[in-house]
Image 1 (cartoon, rainbow, N blue to C red):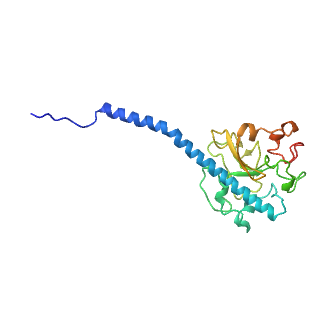
Image 2 (image 1 turned 90 degrees about the horizontal axis):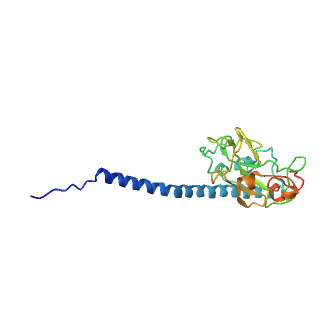
Image 3 (image 1 turned 60 degrees about the vertical axis):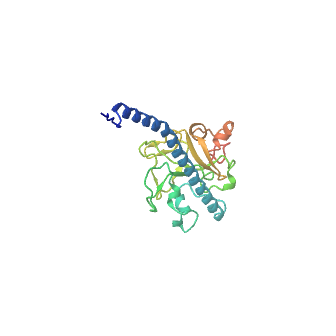
Length: 228
């Protein structure tokens, strides 16, 4: 008499296999998540780089004078203004901004702000050659608020869309950077290089005293006096 053996998995074997799969997923998830964030960081820097290059073309056409901080600077760089500095509204939306994209000139999401101190002393357009330390002075950076559910709230129709170290959006002061668990943020400096900064020690912290020149020059065109 031949004996028949079952080739099916036992319950214990299935549980072991499921446990192994769960362990492998748990091990792989941080790596996959990290790759996704690095991709967003790269895209965010690329957006800022494109905005910076478009601004340089704008400066070339306007005798080195920046837009006013009360202007809708986004539309001055977008083809809606009759220029070809930037190809679409999507460049103004950070990959960390989870709102849906749009090409509507009034409602398209905008994630980046222009430095609110980028103006001449007493007001008016800041001239690029008046910036004391162009490699430090921030021109553009992500503009957020304190809402965890919707940290970005800007749109293409907003005039005076600026950013500062103590930025206040519709729901309050932004609580951190865009990546590395809120510890890092990308910016575009006045010399048009793009940099990844520490949120707390390089971006947020600021003192317009000559003793902290490198920090204050992030936000002030004339960091010694603290003037815009």
